[in-house]
Length: 221
Image 1 (cartoon, rainbow, N blue to C red):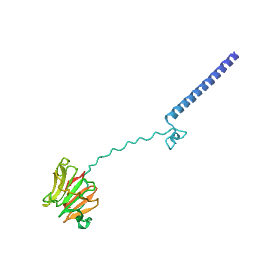
Image 2: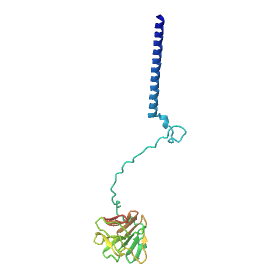
Image 3: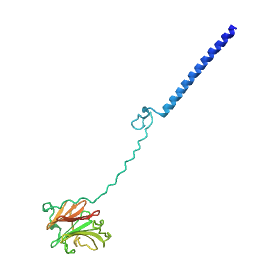
Image 4: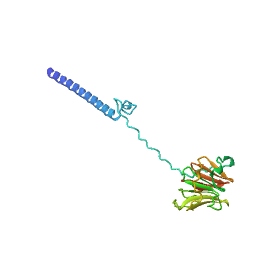
């Protein structure tokens, strides 16, 4: 009887030991699996340590950041600001170099798009005026076709008015020779009326009245 009890007790100890080992093994396996899942889900910072985005021999290349540019707010582009009228001291060319006939003076812009004249005999009653090969509708609403026989022009009249026109002939081009170029930065003055040439266009003044005209600008003021 004592022998039987010994066998039963021994068997119970073996079973308990086996269960403990099995349970321990299961916990270790579960811990190992959890560690594996955690490692796959959250790579360490060292995986992105390559400063060149992963061109080195180890680690993973980091994907470039996708930057969405901020939307640009459109801004209304108005006409360029008109500089104050020059005075006699600012005239830096000799008007006589631009004279083609008695008291008639003609010039063109450096681009060859704008032609202007003081006291043109083809525009009676006009102090100074310009015409273009191509421009845009004037700010007074005048629209031309931009063709050889219907092109934009603008002039200062002897009565002081500023008038945007369409012309079908060369009333401010001089001739028969082509007029001299009024270079950017140059100002010409004839009997107190001035024209300035710059990259924005040709601007002519008679006191505080005048105009600016170019390929992209057609303003009477």
